[in-house]
Length: 193
Image (cartoon, rainbow, N blue to C red; front, side, top):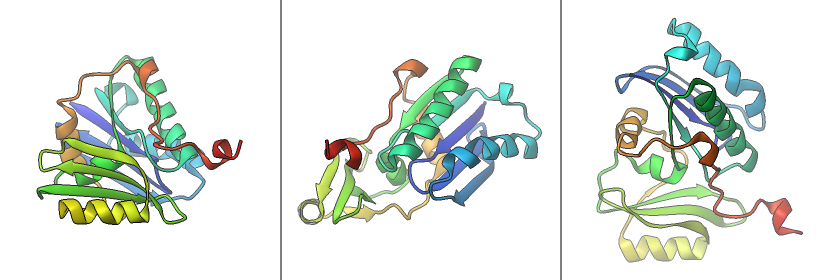
């Protein structure tokens, strides 16, 4: 089975191609505010490098947020379009949960800096069951960390893509039209209205 992994949720872009759950190759690049320029090219490059046709992909796993409003939309739109046109399996996993997959602790607190002393957080138990996923101020993040004695996994931790692909096998195939970005808060432009 050929899997395509796409993440454009933050300033970096991660694209990986896997065969039977093992990485064939991946691209991880820092491209702030240039996702629309590079993502399609990276996907094309990874197919060329592995001498595979886009039609050989059996499934797409896409990170649907939270993170950069525009970045999320780019990755999700590409994944949805691709899955729809080729009629292949597509599933989403959010960036908070994806970062803790493969980490073994009783409680895991995944954080993404949302600027101005605010964070996107995901609190999970040892089996990756969601306790909380939301947008919080630093004070609430500190309270949760203390209350649960949780291991902190921040946005600098790279994904364990092979374990994410394995984890997503339990998620049912989704209708590409039903897939939406996960923002956890309104974009700043919308909040000011």
